[in-house]
Length: 192
Image 1 (spheres, rainbow, N blue to C red):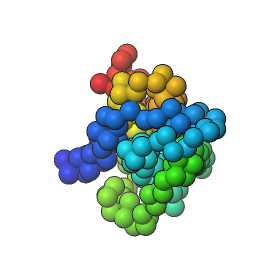
Image 2: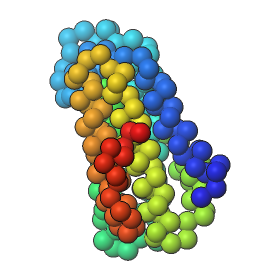
Image 3: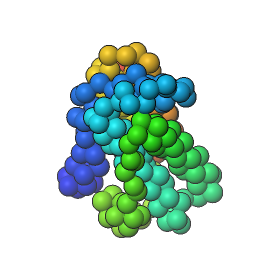
Image 4: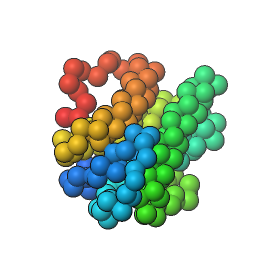
């Protein structure tokens, strides 16, 4: 992988960590946890901005799996797993977008698939293993981004939401990593 490609992929993940140095509101916590809030105006503009960074990252994951599924490089079993992971990212994104809207914000929109393809250098993917490697790197980046924001939260409920998202991403990473014949991640290997 070229240094530019690695930098591009992980810089978007680092943006989530940097953007979430502020603490989200209790209202956002309730929304992401599936609850309702009575006073949506308690969310600050920075809360909505942080959620929008997460939406952008989830859009990237959704697009990456769409590109993988259309590539013709995945065998049938792997395509089923990729479709499942893409659905997980859609569910994450739907929850994040609903929270933004309920808080009175406007969610960012997705980019054209071609923009994601260019940013991810998918033209360099030639084999199923290349696709799985890219997906594993994206999932690891997402895991570390969500784990990286947990210490920023003053409310334990929001930390729990971030942990739940990180758990999904870590699960995806583990499956992809093992499918590539790589060893398990070391103890305490995530979020470092």
